[in-house]
Image (cartoon, rainbow, N blue to C red):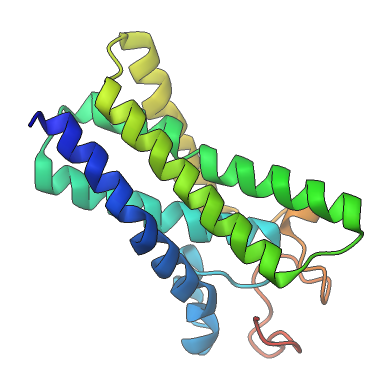
Length: 189
């Protein structure tokens, strides 16, 4: 079997791994006693932005494990990941804000389902892109550029959260990392 097919299967196997890892990262910041370095990858509040990180970092880690295992063409692989890792966050944002606009509030069961569906869609997109291969140099560079931009955004915007709805924990109005002497009054759910 061609390496691309093995990589595609790897991405599909990653769906439950990424979902479970992202779910654990939802609580990791609180479990750590609000240790700031962990804020890089773990949710620090209940904002939509923090939930996007829970999809991104485990997906990237799974991709890096796949790369280390199969050693595919680096530029083709990471360009495919750059495109695919945009899928889950886009779906989370579109579906979450869409259904809450219609229903007037969020529901935990829907939020969990959105997370699982978005992860599955992102991993499927990755499997398809890796299997098909990105051959155009321009598309490869764009994909790698997208990946780089995502890593930079997810690495910095928790620490430099912006005053927009995407970054605000609607339960308590906190944007970004809660002050250490004032952790969230309502624990993460």
